[in-house]
Length: 130
Image 1 (cartoon, rainbow, N blue to C red):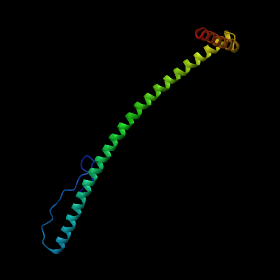
Image 2 (image 1 turned 180 degrees about the horizontal axis):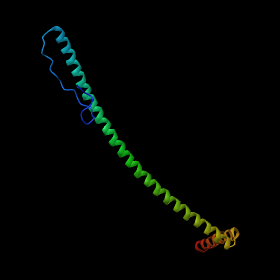
Image 3 (image 1 turned 90 degrees about the horizontal axis):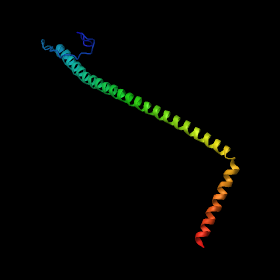
Image 4 (image 1 turned 30 degrees about the vertical axis):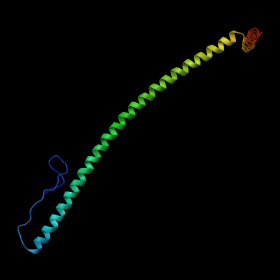
């Protein structure tokens, strides 16, 4: 009797067999042990079935996690590309601003403009107060 494989190569539960032909003590002892072994094998079958179901659930969960990680990696790649574009644009604006300041006469002219603007604002305030 082969209990480990069926025709498809899978585990096959043990079928209970009736060994109650003889009434001698030795046969009773053997039958008792066979019944105990069959009961233990039935329990093991239940345990193996539960283990197989758990393994299948874990496989499904790992597949779902893999899909979610792939999706989030794509999102991170998109964010990275957007950040690279924004950095390039900021560098361009900074460079253009530096060029504009240099064309306008440098930092000295900018300082003169700021001081003159403050003087104009002070004069406007004095006119309004008096």
